[in-house]
Amino acid sequence: MNTFTQTVAAMGEPPHTPATTNIHNNNINNNNNNNNNNTPNAQGMITPASSDVDISNETPQNPMDFIRNFRPDRELEESYREFIRTQGIEAFIRTKINKSMSKKDICVLILNLGYPKKALEDYNVLTLRELANVLVHLICNDRSLKPDEGDANRDDDYDDDSSMDGSETEYEKETERRPGSFKQPLVPPFKYTLPEFITGLSTARKIVVITGAGISTSLGIPDFRSFQGLYTQLSKLNLSDPQKVFDMQTFKRDPQLFYTIAHMVLPPEGKFALFHAFLKLLQDKDKLLRNYTQNIDNLEHRAGLSPDKLIQCHGSFSHAKCITCGATFKGEKIFKHIRKKQVPRCSKCWADVQEAELIYGVIKPTITFFGEDLPERFHRLHSRDLRNSDMVIISGTSLNVNPVASLIEKVPSNVPKILINKDPIEDLSSFFNLKLIGLCDEVVAWIAKCLGLDWNIPHADYSAKSEYSVASVNSSTYTIKKRS
Image: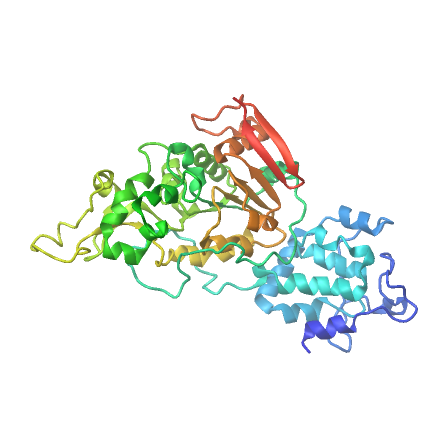
């Protein structure tokens, strides 16, 4: 039996104590009052010190009022979490959990660990042991408390997100996510209202934004899976699976197939969408921790995002590379070939060659195909970024491609997760605290208008005078649309 099990098993209502112990009781058994200090007991455990318990002397009579009014100590939260990450869960249990603790003590510990108040909504009917099990469940299943597998002390210095060396790694490669493949979140998302989101944006300092093709469709770049998306258009090629166009093995067999359609996803010259400008605004306000984009159009760079704030999970058209000799080029060098549906080839490789296999000397944009690994920076930084975030926004994506899709599972339960999308993601709905359904550009324009003149988005398509209709679908879902 491990420390968790032993401690929780020892917790229970002593004889003659009601199962619903009054929240004012400092301990389950009033005879244990002398143990409420930092002196280790026979089991080597201590009761939380007074500095660990942020409760005023006048606790509200109603326990749920106490929970609603409780203000977690963020410094204490970080101290607790850092202790667990460095010393381990067992050490935390030994020093912070005591069998003489009251329901109130456990409640405060849960809240000061940063878990949502919704986790305590059944407080009145839970026994002491059941409440302790809630704490155990939250800690054991909190991915953010697990140390990074990589080197957590490495610098965040920018390095190119494109796979320039083509080397194989042990990292998870890009694969399509099967609907329903994610387990539902163990801790339901806490209630997060639209006004709370608007206020949260004004105070947040470490926002992670995960984006997909939907943020660029206003520029005429197709998304992948909608009715008018790229895969629908590719059905004209009579492929059994349109995704094969972005498969590395298919590319090596017949590079012409990719270059037949590459012009469809080539970024327009000199433009970026309003959503890209919103990302730049978040950066300028020192609120953007990182943008994880699945897009290959490189428009974030054009909008002015700093390289250290941007991770191009699937590479981009910014560079190109010879399959044979490894020579690299600026992406623009092959744009003319792409627009003409021609396969670009390396002049160096073909200088003294008259005939060779089809793939010889072919130049490929540094975009990540199925079967290729994602950039090293993605694997190195995403766990740390999600753990340190104070808000996560997912926009313009159906989260159908792993490993980017799996990021939603790794966001700490106490961090609000907001979906801004043209369509809901039905099988992942329970992961989000708030869902704003509408065109990505229109939704962020409405958000900026709500935040006031200081949030005007520097883009030709933005006007603070625009009017929007906002309709509630349910308590966590709203549709937002610009009025004509």
